[in-house]
Image 1 (cartoon, helix red, strand yellow):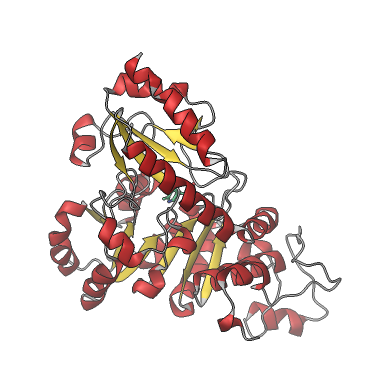
Image 2 (cartoon, rainbow, N blue to C red):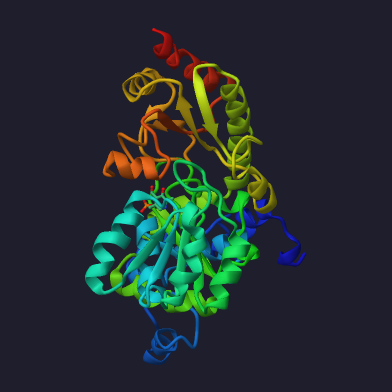
Amino acid sequence: MSQPDLGRSTLSIHGSSLKDAHGAPHMPIYNTTTFGFDSTEALLDVVDGRTPGALYTRYGLNPTTFALEETMAKIEGAEAALAFCSGMGAEAAVFAQYGRDGIVCLGDAYGGTMELLADQLPLLGIDTTFLLGSELDRLEEALKTGAKLVFFETPTNPTHEVFDVAEISTLAHEHGALVAIDNTFASPVNQRPLELGADLVVYSATKYLGGHSDVTAGFVLGPAELVTPVWNWRKNFGTTIAPEPAALLARSLRTLTVRVEAQNRSAQAIAEALEADPRIARVLYPGLPSHPGHDLAVKQMQGYGGIMTVEVDADGATTSKVADRLELFALAPSLGGAESLATQPSTTTHHGLTPEERARRGITDSMIRLSIGLEDTEDLLADIRQALEAVTA
Ligand code: PLP
């Protein structure tokens, strides 16, 4: 059976062409920093890239890393993949390679990304123009100033704004710019940016790809021509994934589809139930027809993910009490794991912004972001409903 005929679940299990010499069903952990050669000639063949092979783990030339990257590339439908020690490591390497003429960042990005773009990269002469979704008509103007990289998340955090990947990619390409998408929220199960026209995809694999809140990692994926130049940045920044997390992540990828599809179903049911609850003013979830980005999400996503933001019909202090009363949901600023998590953006992820800036971004004190895990849907709903009693208490 040829690989192009295989589905994503099959590829997530059988995607690596590398086979273990002893018949282990999956590539074992090569917990070694370096690899020996029989001759200088054989060593130089690998060093000079004439023969693919293991050499040095920080270079990513380790069989455990190879197997992970080949599998992830197959899942994403990408020609090439690079695995990093974190999502930030992956983003930093892309910005260093492709952001030097300027970056345009659309909408709300993860706080760490915003900090890197706004505070650290300008010190190196890499400047970013930040545009909100409501300012999309200024994208062309920003591209005319010479920026050669457009970067965004879709859906965004925490308002779940949906950007049109195909339309933005067409415009960027007309101006000779590349488009890199942080697809962490959607995962490859729910959204395929490369098929929609984007050039590169980055992930915090710490979220859905890892899926168990026990591994920190990242990916850059795309055509080999664009991914290969990023390799040197990873090598010399020293942000390559280590063998143990690489094996753990490969283990997690084998269940990616079933996990994400279950989280999609559970989140949709919870979003619909909460939308009907009088103690909730608004539910922001792309799978709800009431969401402003719903039609676009239907067009470009295969599922709507496990994350939603609910706006409690109460002030910020009461909303904190609701969050504090949650029992199954841990109050933690992450997402994508088997465990459900909750966070009030104004006190965590967006706490560093001024109240005016939060208001400009549509973020209110009454919002709680929920990352729906793999617990029983009814149990999660019962937990949210009991926590909402704080509104009427
Ligand atoms: N992108 C998104 C959307 C995130 O939520 C995060 C972390 O929360 C990152 C990137 C950074 O990933 P990491 O924590 O793996 O460096």
